[in-house]
Amino acid sequence: MLLQRDSGAEETTGLGGAVQDVSEGTQQELGPVTDFFNRLYDYFTSTEFLVKLIAALAVVLVGVLLYRVLTHGVPRVLRWRRDRAGRLDAEAVARIKRQDTAITLIRNALRYIVFTVVALFVISIFIGNPLPATAGATIIAAILGFGAQSFLRDVIAGFSIIFEGQYAVGDFIEVHPPQGVAGIVEELGLRMTKLRTLSGELVFIPNGAMTGVTNYVSGQQRFNVEVQLSDPEAVPRVLEVLGEAAELYVRPPRLVEREESAGRVRLRIQAGVLPAMGWLVEENLVSRIKAAAGEEALASEPLIYKVDQASLQRIRQLIPETGEQALRKKPL
Figure (cartoon, helix red, strand yellow):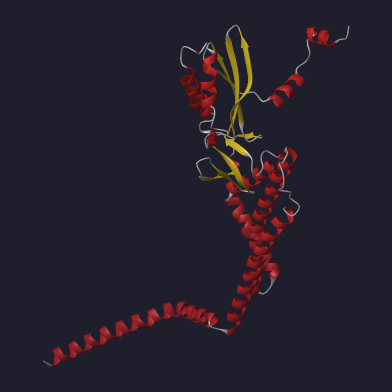
């Protein structure tokens, strides 16, 4: 009995010692971690950290206020002498587009500049020396540059678009596939272009993804529709349908020329629609004209063509003159 009690006591003592050894070993291993969190807690609750935090918040607040003042003040300065009275000519519209493009670029650039300056100031507040903060920010920027090649590609493409004047804010453009979207440029930034489609969606396209762009400088497509009628009595009916759905056109369909010869009437109708809405003329208007005239009154299918007179004249000037043309211009 005594031997059993002594052996039991020895086992209990050995188990307790092992537990104590494990506990002491755990405390030794976790000691540095505990000290780290204690020092971290002391630092976050210290007066020095609270002062730095208040200073950092003040810098951020000043940066936000400065950004808002600049983004609201610069557009007012650029738009100060804008004349909105009367009808705007082509030069005035181009000037307004350049101003709007400059405004969006300045806003976009200010966002990056203010964020970078505020971040450097906040880092310098906590580190205590702005030079290491600047060096560290440079290193981080270099690392991010290597890892963000697409971002740099978009920025470089944005500079190219701006300096080459490919398009501006307010232009109606069509982006070639794979995007395959058309709309009005609402914002032109260094990295992104925002398009507002005709159905109202806002599309964000990275500048580096612009594989090709068609810029509709005039903001519309002009269509000419020639109608040959064998019955003059069908003319009023055709002219009556031109006013239908006029709100969908930039320039509603109107009669610009009428010729009568040998009992036939030739009508030339002109209409202007937003780009990518050519179907409004090619399908809707032509169907209305054919229905109003009737099959018996139509001498032939309506002829549709798109020709810009200014562009046609410019192309004619570039074509070399033939001998016959030169003789016609030569005075007798």
